[in-house]
Every structure is written in structure tokens, then in C-alpha cells.
Image 1 (cartoon, helix red, strand yellow):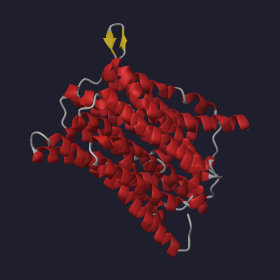
Image 2 (cartoon, helix red, strand yellow):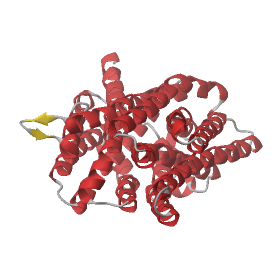
Image 3 (cartoon, rainbow, N blue to C red):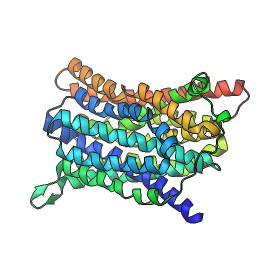
Image 4 (cartoon, one colour):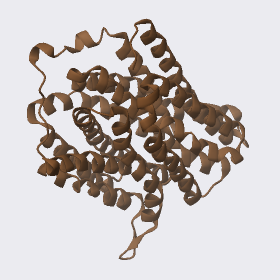
Length: 403
């Protein structure tokens, strides 16, 4: 029993570790990809937006297949898909083929995220906030290493050939095969919810709390994921930083991000999930706005914004697991699906803002102003996450419900 529990924990923790690698090597790679295919900021934003679109696709079948085939099969399928996507990215020779490979990778990521969220909701019935943040701590742990690993691998030469971004993606995504071992060795818990206790999606959709959770998570996820896709680009284009230095700052962001989840996770169980979300979102927005206003010396504050935004996702998952205990898979699927609809345009909007402001400002400071305007949108999303958390707090107080 203890051995099986260890295998399940390994699947969750190593799964999030691999998830962090796959998500956050794109920062250093994106300027290289942009240069190779001669892409503008809008095209880069569109490429990054495939993340959210793929989540939508994954949400249409993952929870249902998990209920039908089991978590073991779906987790193995998720890891296998991610490994295969590394091969597709390596073989991509045009923007279209790269976009297709990226989309396939994010389908695998979306499947894995939902499977891990469902498994975590079933496993972590005690100290839910702390355990959810601990699980996501491993995502942040690999995210610290990911930008420097990507930057180093892209410069690595094997047999006289530089790996560049294609070889880097191949090497990193093949690591997805590792957590398949504990996944296949585990006996995962089955659903013990009686059919009469299962709430249909249409009933859940009438719950205003769930819709506020969707808004909190949507703006929080846009603020979180946009840093991985745009911080390196921002520092290179606006302040003429080298790729290595900008990647190092992204790693510092994930250093704050990771240990925030480790140390702030237990606090969420003590002060409440909703109050925590208000404080976390507001802190991230404050650091981002001051960091942009301060110019290049404020770059460290952009990294420090990770302290606030990091606990938002796992805290929301803990809230769902506690409030919708017997329907967590349905609630998670609903929230992530609607979140995908909201966030699919996030990177596209950032890219469009950067392009529009750059063209409006013209030569000289146009690029700087464009990148700053795009990054201000990231801070605004963190602020909106905090604002809707406050609305949720007020609503729950009126209902005499504490989460």
C-alpha cells in the first residue's frame, strides 16, 4: 500500500517536473525560432496561443476517457504524446509544421494537466492547499532549470552539429518517457462516487462560484504563462540583454515562483483559499507595474512577481477539490475548458499590443514602448485575478460559506 502510494506520488511529482520543462524551455527558444522563420510578434503570440487552444481540445475528451480507461492509461498516453511531439518539433522545417508540432505538444500537456489535477484531487484529501502547492512546486522546480537548460542545450555541439532549438526540444521532450515508469507501476484509485451523487455539467454551470473561479484562474494563468513566453523576449528587445542573461532572469522568476509555492502553500490552509488568492494576485500585479515603471533596473521586480502568481493555480485546484469533492473531475474539466476559452487570446493580445504600440511609437523607442505595453497587460491580468478573488470572497461571506 505504501509502495503504491509512493508510485502515485512519483507520477504526480515527476509529472509536474516534466510539465515544467516542456512549458518553460520556450522562453530562450522563441527568439531563435522568431529569427529562423522571420516571424513578427503577432505570429509569435499566435504560436504561443496554441497552448490554450490545445487545452480546449484536451478538455473535450480527457476527463471522459479517464473515467472510461482509467488514470493509468491516460497518464501514459499523455507522457507518450509529449515525447512524440519532441520528434515532430525536431523535424519541423516551416512555420506551419512547427505550429502543428506545438499544437500536438500542448494537447499532450493539456491531457497531462487534467489527469494530474484529477489524481491530485483524489489523493490529497488532507492539507489540500499545502499538498496541491507542493505538487506544483515540482513544476516550478524544473521551471527554474528549464531556461538555462534550454539556453545551454541550444549551444551544445554533437558530432560537429549544434543542437539549436530543434535538438533542444527533442532532448527535453524525450524526458517525458521517465514518469511513464511509476505511472504504469501504480494502482490508481478508482472513482467511488455513486451515480446519484454526480452533478451534471449543466447543473455546475449554474453555480456563480464556479464562474468566479473560472475568471480568477483564467487571468491568473494568463499572467503566469505569459512570463515564460515573453520575459526573455522583453529583456532582449527592450533592454538589449543577451539571451543568456535574459534566460537567467527567467530562471530567477521561477526561483521565486517555485519556493513561493513551497512556503506559501501551508499558509493557504490557515488563512483561507479566497483571501490567499486576493493577496497573491495583488502582490504579483504590484511588482509587475513597479518593475515596468522603473525601467531596466526594475527587471528583478518582474522576476519577483512570481512570488504572487505562483500559488494561484494550485490554490484554485485545492478550492475545487474541497468544494466539489464528489465531482472534482467534472468541475476541473469545466473550469479548465472555460479557462481555455478565456486564455486562448491572451498571447495573441500581447503580441497584438506589442506590434500596434511599436508601430505607433515609431523608430527609436518604439520597440521598448511596445514591449512595455505588452508586459503591462500581464500585470493587469494578475490584478484582475485578485479583483475577482475579492468578488468571490464577498459572495461567499454573504452565503456564510468559508473556503
